[in-house]
Amino acid sequence: MQNFKIIFLAVYIIIFILSMVFAQNDSADTILIKNRIILENKLNAIIDDVKKNNLLLIALDKAIAQEQESIIQARTLDPPIFNIEFFKSPIANFPNLFKNQEEIDYSIQQALPFPFKIITRINIAKNKKVLSEKIKSITLLNLIKELKTLFYEYYFILRKIEINNENRELVKTYEAIARKQYEVGVGKLSDILRFQTEISIYKNNEFIFNNELSSIKAKINALRNISLETEIGYIPEITPPIFEYTTANLIKLAILHQPSITKINTEINMKKTEITAAKNELLPDFMIKLMYKQMTTMPDDYSFMIGMTIPIAPWSISKYISSVKSANLLVQQAEKEYLNMINMLEVEINNITNRISSNKEKIKTYKETIIPQARQSLMSTLSSYQTGANNFLTILDAHHTLFSVLLEYHMAVMNYMIAISELEYMIGTNLKDVCNIMSNSGER
Image 1 (cartoon, one colour):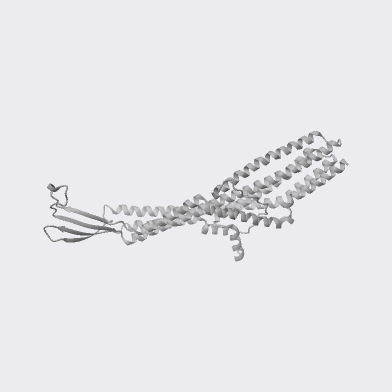
Image 2 (cartoon, rainbow, N blue to C red):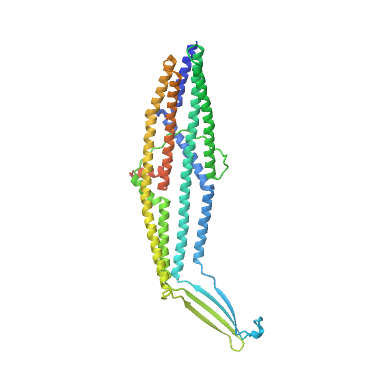
């Protein structure tokens, strides 16, 4: 009867192992693909929360609105100046300015910049607004990249918790087998105690993993600007998506769409506009003045004045020529920074695509080869343990090997998805949409 119980427990373990790694079998791919849709929907909902509620993005919206006001300010002229001049005031009547006053002059004057200067000023303000919008786009992409990294770490911790719980339940079954063997005189008490120690280790691991999960959850909710205790919910295991692309096409897309690149282009355009503004300073500004003279001894009259600056005066022109040279140098600096960023972008995209390829191959190898081998090794070791050919340490070694490779598999999935999110940051758009467009156009 005792031997029957031992055999029954052994069969139960084999069934447990098979069900535990069911997600690694090809027959479960459809379920895992559906799970990926669940994951994507949950992630997109969280991203929408970030877009709506993140305080940094809200602050940048205020900055953009402020730049819009600057455009309005750039269109305006300086306010006019109104003057009242008491001319030939008798000292004896001071401080009464109106007693025996011979003449009071009323004037209003207005400064008028050369028209081209106003147009240039407006263009600079518009470029500053575009620059603020680019900064917001860069910030949003950074936030999404950070969010996705945290989200996939959250996904991995869930897998660790699941595997840890499966570990614990399986070791409990080992402990039951060891106890039955001990009862029939073929086992050792030390085996039972060792298995019980393993169970305690897994209980402690569960506490650690749950703390890690709470920490990641709080960081995600902080980005969403909601209560840190808000639950994210369960994320099921997925099969990671496979994308077809060429690095050259991704680099082209990055140059066109990556906000950091387009931001430098905007800066270059703004600095070129500043060259125009510096050249326009060589053009004169105007001043018009209208005066009305109220006199006691003579008829009232008025006067009209037009004045202008002379920037090309020998003692002034060097200032404006230097400003033009300085603006040109700033453009050249920005252009070199742009070329350097393109070079760094190509290097970074190459590095990320290499990481994606490496993790993709690792996922395939673990799923198709390493995990099945580790599972088979554990089952073989368990069978030998039933006959007394192996001791409990051999079982634990095979057991740890299987669950280590399961953890490494899920870590590879996490690293793969994080690398995908980093690549999306570099190209400035969603990789799935890009690959669909390339597929429809016959490009890769």
